[in-house]
Every structure is written in structure tokens, then in C-alpha cells.
Amino acid sequence: MRVRGMAVGVAALLTVAACGGSDDDTAGGGSAEVTVWMYPVIPDQDASIEFWGQVEADFEAEHEDIDLTIEQQPWEGRDEKIATAIASGQGPDLVLLTPDQTLQYQVTGGLKPVDGAVEEDRDAFLPSALDVVTFEDELYGVPIYHTSTTTAYNMAAFQTAGITEPPTTWEDVLAAAPALAANGVAVMDYSGSPETTLNLTFYPLLWQAGGSVFTEDGSDVAFDGPEGLAALQFLLDLQAQGGLPADAATKTNAVDGGPLTTGAAAMTFAITMPDVEHMRTAVGAENVVVAEPLTGEEQVSFGIPGVLALTSISEDDEAAYEVASYIASPEVNARLNDAAGTFPARTDVDAPTGDDALTALNDALQFARPGEVTPTARQVMAVLSAQLQAALQGSKSPEDALADAAAEARDLIARGG
Image (cartoon, rainbow, N blue to C red):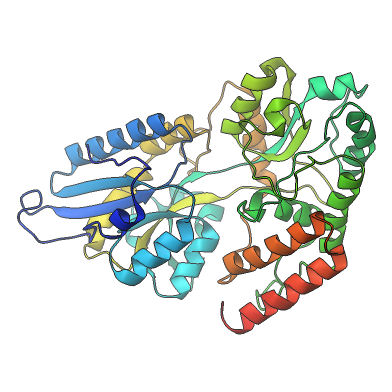
């Protein structure tokens, strides 16, 4: 097995001989070589190593002419490592990306189309999962799973505060905050660290307020409008009532060991299935309720397809197509969903069943948005994250924080990132 653990040095990662399609006869007797960079979709490291090792072995048993290497990478520093690898020409043939990352690298010429990987079963994929990574009428990502997030509640904390029904709207959350704060419990978890993606923190609230990060054509930002102010003010109003963790401005969104598992926070609005399990283990499965997405002006959640993208490094695209098609196949897709707590990106794969939380998360997909897919999405997110943190820390008013973020973001857009 050549599945590598996540404790691999950056220098080693960027010097791996990963050029797909090598004609070197010493590599597997003339085999094509395909390297995939995979990330911790399966949170448990040992389970992840075992899963992808089996995928590697099964694929090579069916494709003796292709030498497949799946390298597991950490989430931390992901964009920088991918960009460096593509620029240097030393890195993966296929890499797991989100839709906004896919567009970012497509615009800069770092990716090739992957229509050839879905020629035989294109109609089996969720149309939305393909549409979000289709640019200029070409497909740039093969969906291998779909994420879903929704609300989860520690009902024991609510009941101790005299609240018998979980809050389902912003108004409900604000109303519940004082009673929980009196018990030393924040009504809602929130993570303001710039290390945390806004897709799981501020953006769902912005969407629930009826807003968006960018204008429809992506030429300007829109988060500094009244909807963005409403979303940020919602957080600040909660904070003023003790409704957010005391370190909300700086904490990451780690659930295991965080406020949701220590009992210091009573609910979250963007949880995944693996983190539901962390909550259940910590506070008791009987106390955890997973329900529909939270509602502000609109009811919205976050969920995206994870896609395999073909980098410009690849020298044997046909071999890479075979790998992408295999990992996206119904059999692997179903097994991955079971192992990772994700959901099918295909219509010919049944969603995981047998658990109320899985059912709730699957149902939440109808409310899911895939983030903001524009070429400067990641850069704008970094700018906005820092200003949101300043507002949560009290060093800027919400109006000034959003205005300063918008000014810097517009400069980024004008410069093309």
C-alpha cells in the first residue's frame, strides 16, 4: 500500500514524483502513474488510511496498467500547498477540491476539464453537483460525495433552562439566550477564528438573512448590504447576552473538546454527521436532537460536493479519468458515505439510513447552498474573516467592519485577486 499518513513533511509532498502517465518502464512495468491528493473527509485518521488503502488496492486489481498512489493531506495550509504544487509542476494529478477552489484554479490555468471521466454515466450525478463545477461549458470536477450541515441541539441544556422546544428561528435563539446564560451556557456555538471557513460560520447566517457574499455576476461584493449587517448584528446581540462562547472571536470550530461537547454551548447551526457523533458521545445520544436548518429571513444551510479535479500537471489524462471515474463509482461512493458521514453525489446511490440524524442531514440538502463560487472567493473570505473577528472583539463597529472588508475585497476583485 502506498497510502501515506498525514504527518508527511511539506517539502516531501511537493517533491513527490507525481506526474501522471509516466512512460518510465521501471515504474510498474510501464504502468501509467496517477497520484491523488486526498483530505480528511473521513475524520478518523486510521479509518481514513484503511479506507483509501483499500480503494487503491481494489483499483489496481482491476487496472493492472495504472499505478495509483493516494496521498493523504491535512486541511491546514491546503490552498497554499496546492497552488505551490501546481506552479512547480510537482504534485498530484488529481486533487480533492471544493467548487470555489475549482473555479479559482481553473481561472489560473491550473486545471484541465474532466468531461472524459463521466462520459458513460454523466446522467447519474446530481445535476447541481455538476453545474457548480462547470465553467465555460466544460466540467472541471468529478463529484465523489456531498456534504450537508444543519442544526443540532443539546436538549438537556435547554430543558435545564426551562426551554422545552428547540429554537428554530433567529428570534427563538435570541429569546432563549438569557435563560441559558443564567446557567453559564451559551445558546449557540460560534467560531470567529480566521482559520475557520466562513462556509460553516458567517455565510449561512448571511444567506439566512437573505444576503450573499457577491453580486449575482460576481463583479462586486454584496456582504456589506443590510443583510450582512443583520447577520453580524445577530451575532453581536447574542454575544451581548452571553449567547456565544466567551472566546467566540478566536476559537476554531472543533466540536470534539469544544463548547458543544463540554456543555458550554447548547446548539450549533452548521454541524456534520461526524460531529453529531462527537456530541452524542460527550453529552449522551438521548440529549442530542438534529433538526432542520435555522431560519432567519430564509431557511438555508451549507452543503457542497467534494470533487476530484485534474491538475495541469497530469501527463496521462486518460489514466486519471479512469481513477476519477472509479472513485466516483456507485460502489466507492456508497462506502465513502458510510465511512465519512457524507451523502451521495449520485442519484443511483441510496443515502445512508438507519439514523435520525442522517435523515435530518439528508433532508437538509434541499436547503443547502454550495458557498460562493467566484475566482476571488477564497481571498475575499480571508479579508472578511479578519474584519468579522474585529467586530466580535469589539475593536470595530459592525458597520465599519463590513465597510472595511468590502473596500479591501473590491480592491482584490479589481486586481483579479
